[in-house]
Length: 254
Image (cartoon, rainbow, N blue to C red; front, side, top):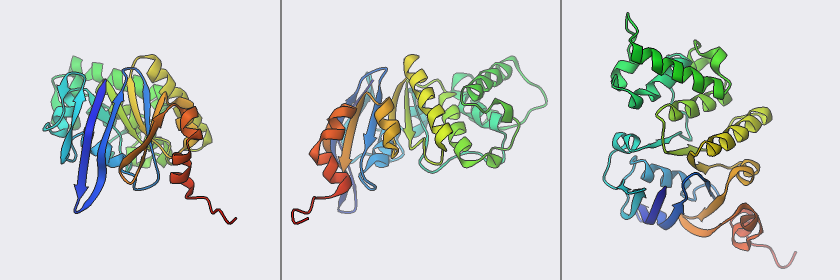
């Protein structure tokens, strides 16, 4: 589904992403992990066109993503959520999801944000589709709420529903479990597994290792912008380089 080759991004003289390469199989859940500052979110920003790479190649199947702007990449089938929530707080929960569905129809993003006196058949279909997504994340009973009134964890789930509304072939989730309680995290884990069963390809950045180890097929570990290991959850948990990256060097005198 996605192939990244030699991806590099400098900020000043610092390589935030340093010749990173990986391949994401279609229909899999692929996780990027690493300590804070490892470059995980920067990789997401490069894939989605928020930042231009200094070098490297990004391909979605046969489509070269380098040089495309974020809206063109979204139209190609890539959707994402953000580490810092990006919702329309004064709009309703349902309206937030409908704005994400504009790529499915002809009404356009601006029209999707404007209340109109009449509802067209297309609008009605997109609203029904959006309500279905809200039901999948457990928010259908709050469809009429202002999005800003939702608890933080439910805002996370709303952002996922809005990303799914565009029917992406590749979904990038940046710390989706952040702020979720135990029950919400369990529901999220089950939801991600169901999305995979439906054939959706997911790239996950997440600090909740229990979630990563339960849902990921493969894991790429970054540290200081570089790949230090790639493997299955079992292999990652046993790798000495990964353990050192998270826990530091063992003191031989202790």
